[in-house]
Image (cartoon, rainbow over all chains, first blue to last red; front, side, top):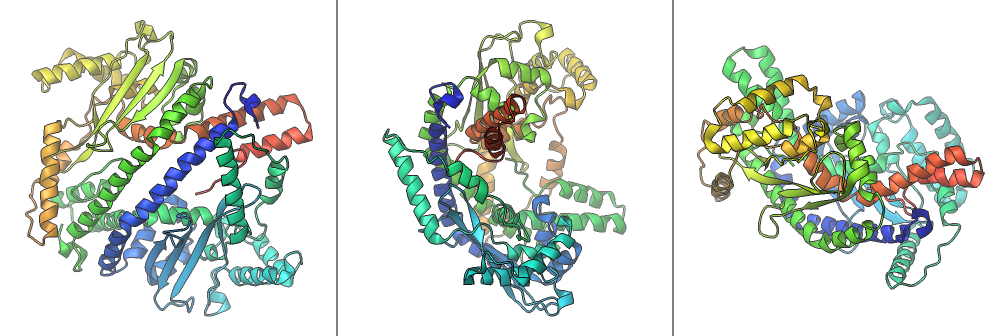
Length: 312
Length: 312
């Protein structure tokens, strides 16, 4: 698109360059945030480790963007066995602050052997201009087929990923066939939260990403210096072809969910925990007594955290 | 509340102190953000001033949290006369980064004489532990009574505010009576966006706020040093009494709306403007032609900003 599109002297490129400058500020703030809150998160970890069921209660209060993915069976497993959660911006301090790792720790449970499940997301840019989070499938060692909350999907995704890496990307393998059938028989609302670990996202290697970032930064610099920058005509078309979602993705919005866990559930954990305590107190009240004072306190608690009400 | 409430060795006070430490980090980040993006906002202002209807188009695309308050008559006025919008964290660099001023500039229009309307919100803390944004009513010089989109409410709010300051806070004045009648006859969904300018919030003076902040910081410091800190028994009760919403508030959620404008619409203005352009292109397409290429481009445009797709 060019200045002509807006019928004025401002071009889309100018607006986009400005947006990129704002994004640089946001990246710098993410870096600062990680630095400034590192010790506090370590302190929080120690404190909450002393509170039974802290993380299960936090998940129980999670906002709709997260809660909608937690099926009743997932919830039972999380409530019974989730020991801890942690989020790390693992490419910092040098790398991209948008790359993130989410680690779940579990106690002994009926469903799987793993005591720790880590899901990593890398921020990548592709040559056609796309940018976003990509990942690798993480397998779960289910205790038996009927304990597998993903109904075998996770293992198939992992197998397909390995096959693809071994050069069978274009081949219709047995695993692909099976997964396709499985996906056809699972309603979108019915997939387990644990399918999250199967997310792949677009296939963009670290090298492609480095080159793409370098190329786009050079173009941006050239534009800032007032040079004419050639816009490759095929860029938009490429984008459209490649941007189709990977058809065998078992949890297509796992990248958004990861960001929501990292930017909402993780920083807001204490807030959600206190909410859970208050709801608990409130529902106890319903049965215990009709003592006015107690009721009042509970009503109060339902609306705001103890002592301090913060807005904004 | 005490450690006993949690049946463990962690007290609510510990969790709250930790939350305050996290909040200090957020405040520092707000300060950094203001500093790092100041020049960019100045640059953006110059660029978008060249684009006809930039701000009206941004408002047209505003998220539901803002859009729900814009009535059709408000929208017509904004589309025809909004020249610019700006947000300033006016207490920076020394003061609280949560205090904010929103300024709307208007061209000549049928409804009011003002060319500029500024609404300021101060972050205040009260002695009973409440904290939030407070404001003062801003009057609008409507051209005539039937052009007044608030049906006279804004003028009454302003009058009541002046009366209250002159010592008539406990008095049932004529203005209060009239405003109460007016509020009873207006459905919540029916109030004009311009009622926003009438918001008062809790009455907390700068002096009370300074003292309250000082007192709570001292307590927090004492707790950190391991001293026993007396919890005033009446704190919670006070809070409950005082926290009742001011009954003559004509736009009770104006503080939330202000934060949404400051944290979403204002930083995201270019994104919303591009969205508006794309929708426009798309609806033109519907009527113009069935040329495949053009349709493709428009479909493409509907989903993502030109050239670059960003997630997270």
